[in-house]
Length: 506
Image 1: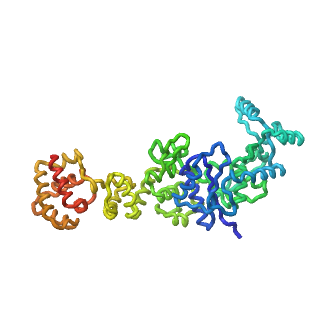
Image 2: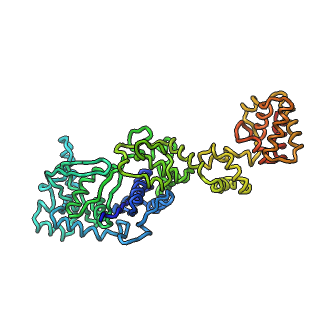
Image 3: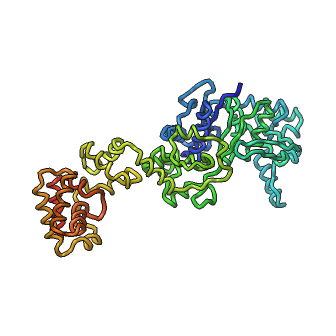
């Protein structure tokens, strides 16, 4: 029977979650759901010195906003918990001891000053110091010391680390689900620290032990972890455990395509690199987020899915719901090379998703903006305005710029447009328009349109000579949707008042 697909997203709570991390979570989620598996959230907080208050809650809130729910994790405890590494620390010491007992790891008592001296000596000769097979017997560890000396140091409470004993001359053959076959000569690997004397494991040991105990079938993570893959595969061998399948996702690159996308790029070019706004608990600095900048979660998910994945040859479809992504997703179609981040494409997705959004839901969001401006139109009126203007909007925050004239009369006019539209005879023509509007008992859009157009035709006045100054009077600029909709919406009295104000300014 095939092993059940179980994947995990394992961020460290050291600050806000970068969108690269959100993409890793998304790809894990899509893969799990495609194969009827489980998506697990694990908080890797072994490095307490880098722990940031609120970062774990931020991760959970970001996943919830993006609609990427986890099946197991903090707050959703199941058989494989606890899901914070700091709450599992008693586990790791036994596994470190198991590696020492099997000869796959050893105690190292080298002081930091000793190792620094070795590094400087190597640097002076143009070399890089690597702690491994070629020098470990000359250093202070349980391979070079007698059993009695080791025990004495342990009994005396001397500081130590547990290092992995990398094989000295083995060609390690590995397979990455995205990159294919990889091989490495183990003689170039260093003896990584697995466990520290403060009782905490390093990432490498905790990661392997947790993945094994949580029955993880596939490790899908960022490309930056590719150099750790040989050590992780060797650790599985050392424990005698079956390793999961590994897949390393390509980097998300700067918009220029050169280098990894960073917060600095977003700050410089004016786009977020975090899903939610983040306030640094130490400095109080605010970093923008997609949610607070007005993006829809569907936009962010669709945009991230296409950073490093495609649906395969011949597919031109760009808009995918989460369910459609689950159906279409496969690791075979994840790219090996980095994917360039395109802020304009993200805005394109946002525009598309805004058009699909329910007018009533958008009206509720817009009503909050109107309320802040002291305006309280009915929900029906706001829905009507939204339906009229949303095709020109990308964000709900664009709505006021596109529709303020529905709720407030202009107090000034676009100078260039006024000069172009308001001629010597315009005020006289506008007074005739007022007369026409006053005579109408039915002020519906269709009726006003029919009556005004008929009148313009009968008077043999050019349409532009009426419609341009009329729009300017109602809107304050040469913009906005159907002019007859504006007239009908604001009503007869308000329409006339606005035209009279425009005449008075001439």
